[in-house]
Amino acid sequence: MKRNLTSMRRILARRLFDLWRIISIPCAAATAGGPVPPPDDRPAPEPEASRPPTDAHGSISKKRLWYWGAAILIALPVGGFLVAASGIMPIKASSGHWPITAWFLNFSMGRSVSTHAAGIEAPPLDDPGLILRGAGHYHISCRPCHGSPERRQPRVPLAMIPHPTYLPPVIPEWSPEELFYIVKHGVKFTGMPAWPTQQRDDEVWAVTAFLLTMPELDEEEYWQLVSAEPVGRAAAEAGTNGSSSRTEDDVRQLARRLCADCHGIDGTGRGDGAFPSLAGQHADYLTSAMQAYARGTRHSGIMEPVAAAIREDDFRRLAEFYGSTSTGRALRPGTPENASQSEPADADLAASLERGRQIAEHGIPDEKIPACIDCHGPTAHPRNGHHPLLAGQQEWYLRQQLELFHEARRGGSEYAHVMQPIAGRMKPEQIRDVAAWFARQTSARTQPE
Ligand code: HEC
Ligand code: HEC
Ligand code: HEC
Image (cartoon, rainbow, N blue to C red; front, top):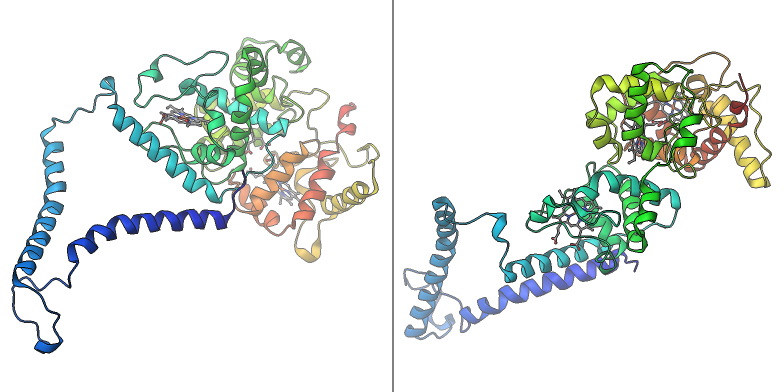
């Protein structure tokens, strides 16, 4: 199913050739027998002998043909505009499309998607974390139009023309690359929206990975993927300084309703680390991160719609709620002295972690890369609340954010300009080593400080 650039070029070349034939054959027929004379019948300047023999009758009919052609070309758009301006054209969705129009629109969409998806190559899509992230987004953003195995299709979108398809039966008709193309770019004239941010592809692949699994899911399995319920144990573990004031109950409810399906009610993330951990993170950083998503300065098609739907003053309340959770897996400032990490299983990993520790604690002065812990900890003294804690954060997430910074695709809060050039100078292996080291600084954090 993987296609490469060469096959895309081949398909494009074939389409252009078809188009050229469609245009050139009638034109060639119209001009057969020689070039068209100038309209005023004045003799051409060249000598008699060099002119091709033409018969007078033939040249008049050819001239007519050109006049008629030009007249039709002008009349069509003018006529179309007059019909539109008269307002007699029905645009009501209630009457649907004629079968031929519906067929033609479907046909064009299928052809366009297949041509444009030809140069795309899908990454591996079977990572359960990727599927879980895609599922969370689908449940919030796609289900209201397309329905789900757990509740077929809401009634109102069925009155759209064309109406959003119930997806499980049609997914196998598309390749992963075609699904990616549809989800990333949307479909004009149908109501199918484009991905909210075009800066990055990894999140679109997450939704594609989920779409591919959806046809096999029953109601129960779908629900398990998209919902944090039951949250009883996790909720009981979420320490919130023992207080149970009315406002705290409110914010817990807000978190349960809006965030827990992905981040868990304890903020450590659902699944096996499928989401970044918020638990124990600086409240200042969490607040500015949510503001950045809501304003569109930090790019995430998953988080931007969530943050944009929340009131600004709830950012701080949610940030303090998650920042103060202290389950065993929460992020904490810690200290390098008590950071004991489990012994790595193989020598390659041990060497990678040692290189990562060097970068984190001392930076690489020759390459103008500063020590990460000076801003991010773990250190004995508290750091600036706008510099996120990294120790104990998910490894894939640290690596991914550094790669996004490196490619200038992450965006961020008004403090992101500090981080951007640092990651911009890092090499892929340095990113991998330092992410592996920070992610493993967890065991110290499970002990009381
Ligand atoms: C506002 C409603 C709406 C939302 C939200 C929406 N879609 Fe769509 N989607 C549509 C419509 C309308 C079509 C076009 C159906 C057609 O042409 O038959 C479509 C088409 C598609 C198709 C092609 C299906 C086919 O074969 O007809 C896929 C796949 C798809 N959407 C996936 C998604 C995903 C994934 C999301 C969430 C990220 C999403 N859509 C969000 C309305 C929506
Ligand atoms: C549909 C799943 C989903 C939901 C629901 C969700 N998040 Fe997220 N959240 C994510 C993903 C995925 C990321 C990583 C995004 C990125 O790469 O920038 C993230 C990132 C974040 C970050 C940035 C973390 C960091 O270390 O920079 C914050 C803060 C955050 N979410 C807060 C919330 C809050 C608060 C809620 C509830 C109001 C919420 N999220 C709801 C999926 C979700
Ligand atoms: C001068 C201070 C400073 C230094 C030094 C620094 N960073 Fe950062 N870093 C930041 C700031 C500020 C942010 C938050 C940007 C934002 O708010 O969007 C950040 C964000 C990050 C993030 C994203 C975290 C998240 O939760 O999304 C990662 C990963 C990161 N830095 C890794 C590193 C690494 C690795 C190093 C060392 C090579 C390093 N940083 C050095 C200031 C710094």
